[in-house]
Each structure stands twice: as structure tokens, then as C-alpha cells.
Length: 178
Image 1 (cartoon, rainbow, N blue to C red):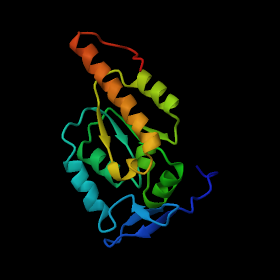
Image 2 (image 1 turned 90 degrees about the vertical axis):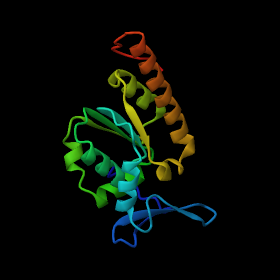
Image 3 (image 1 turned 90 degrees about the horizontal axis):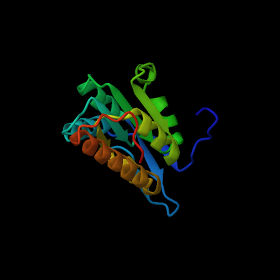
Image 4 (image 1 turned 120 degrees about the horizontal axis):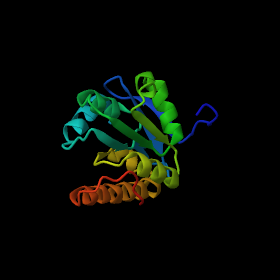
């Protein structure tokens, strides 16, 4: 990630709460916030409260500055495996300036898929997620990159359905194809 040059369309700014957020500018001059411009931590708490089904294995699509990631993992501490998917390496680079990720990077049950192509995500999830899991979408970030995240969402949804069907049939798969 150190070799990646900054993206001039991304600006790390202070929200009204004093916490960091990111403003992404479009070529037409409009902008979009990745997190609340008022209170990103409160937004993360509200997002976490809206996540009703939490399995011991989970996938979070859209890491952004990771307020919601830290909040969800803290609230549901008994996670066997978590797969964190962020399409934009530059956004994750900014997140590392905002948060200390050492507790997550040193945890072997937390897996980062940052800027990974769809084929890599498919391979990793098909070999690693062989039991039902929950997946969680952080829409403010996912909406920035629909061409990347929509295929990922579809892939994960199909994988989860396949797992549930196999579990219903009494099978215990050791690997699933997409």
C-alpha cells in the first residue's frame, strides 16, 4: 500500500464531531462522503445496530475508514473469521492513517481483501467460507464503486445460498464453487 500514490479525488476531512471522514469528488465537481460529515462514530453505531444476523463467520463489504468494522467486531467479539473487502486501496491507505489496525492485522481470524480482483475474492471465499456466514454491506462506500461491489455482492450472495442449500441437504462441504 505504501507504493500507491494518493488519489486527488479523495480528501480526508474533519467531521463536525472532530472525527475523520472522507470526501470523494466526482469529475463533474460533485462530492460524496464515505462516512457521516456530522458524526462517523455515531453512524457506525447505528449501522451496527441495524445488522441483525451476525454469524461466527462474516464478510463486510466496504471498509472505508473502518468505524463500522471496529464497532461490529467489538460488539460481536466471538467472531471465528471475518473477511473485510475494500475495493479502493487508496481509501484503505487513508483508513490506516485514521486508525491503528494492529489489533486486526495481528488477528489471524481477520482477513483483508483490499483492492482484490473478483477472481481472487471468489477463490479465497470458496476455500475458506465453507459454513454459513453473514455478510454486511456498508452502502455509503459500496455505492461509490458499483462496478466492483455489485459483482462481489452477487458472488457472495450466491455462495451463501449454496452453503445454505448444502447444509439443508445434510452435506458438509469442504470447498464450494461459485
